[in-house]
Amino acid sequence: MPPEFRFQGTGRNLQKDMLGDWFRALEGAPQAGEPVAYQMIGGNVAEVLRNFGYHLVFPEVNALQCGIKRAAPDLLLKAEDLGYSPDVCGYVKNDIGLAHSGNVSPMGKLPPPSLLVCTYSGCRTYIKWFEALAEYYQAPLFVLDVPYRRVPAPRAEDVVYVVAQLEELIEVCERQTGRKFDIDRLREDLARSCEAEDLWVRIMDAARHRPSPLDAYFEAVFFMAPINVLRGSEAGLRFYRETWREIQERLEFGLGPVPEERVRVVIEGPPPWMRFREFWDMFKAWGVVAVASTYAHVGGLYQAGVRHDPRRPLESLAEVCCNCYCNWNLGLRAELMHQWVRDFEADALVIHSVKSCRSFSVGQADTREHFIKDLNIPTLFVESDLVDGRYFSAAQIKNRVDAFFERLAHKKLVEAGV
Figure 1 (cartoon, rainbow, N blue to C red):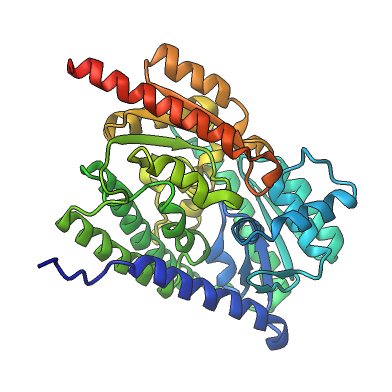
Figure 2 (tube, rainbow, N blue to C red; figure 1 turned 45 degrees about the vertical axis):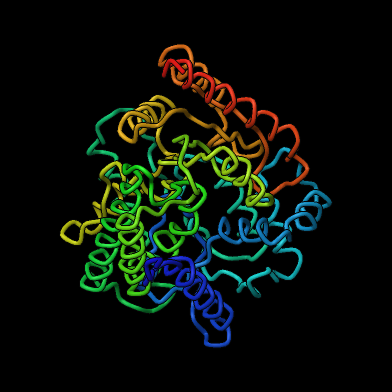
């Protein structure tokens, strides 16, 4: 008699419900007279803004949702009609097109911002993107300038520099909302953030098992949403408590994302949202499971030991800002991926190079050469885009995927002496 699973599907169902509640609250913010802040995922300071009652909008999340729901093509063309080049980041063009189309997304109508907070961490495009939004909405723009991480150990002066800006942001929020900053509320929110981050790392580290109970790329993109958009909230913490129970049940019964795990990989780069399911199926066909991924850490490198800390509220916020994945230089990124290949016993590295995302794609060709020639790690390199289907060639990508994993399977047979 097959076992009765109590928790399977918990994470996905909770995520849908929570994000649905989040978008509905956003729609109602203008009527309720409540402030709205736009910010990026990377290095975001959600706990500070929630301290003042801001509803949070993440343009990146809106863009990926438009990609998944096939709403992006018209929005991209709208932005190009306004003069944006085809080479501009697909997320930017989606967001600009959305703003100029009434801000009616597949998730609901998005409210205009009361405040724009550009956490400039790792991507120069962020600044120009938010400048365009500030001009369009005639809303105030605060740029949080985050130093780029070039050395293995964090620099104390970088933390001091960011903390000073956070104190300035707090003053801006106090003036705009008329509310006083509540340090005790911030500590409470950061305590929830820290617990959720601990649980998130447990979930991701569970991929060390054979078979892995989750795909740390294709499935993690669903599990990672609350750690970015609901971090610090009771709902976000509940999500990770419940999802960890689901993962524990998978470990107990040996459940995995594919019927038979044959290949373990580390994946670099964001997914092609507009063809997400099709892309995943190309890997499932070969029994491939991602046991670690860089994209899961765009909001913070929690799996590398970074945490929010209620005992050091502003300092730990600054440290997380400095330690989101795209704010690390290429050398540090390569070292991290190599560590994951070793620690998670991966067979190969997969690089999905995104045409319009420079913060990820710059240097990926060199990374491929380094892994193949210097580290002797098989590496697959495929190219498409985040949301622009014009750059997704299914036949070409499938040919590369099939040829790579066919060669890898042959290599394993030869090494096994079969």
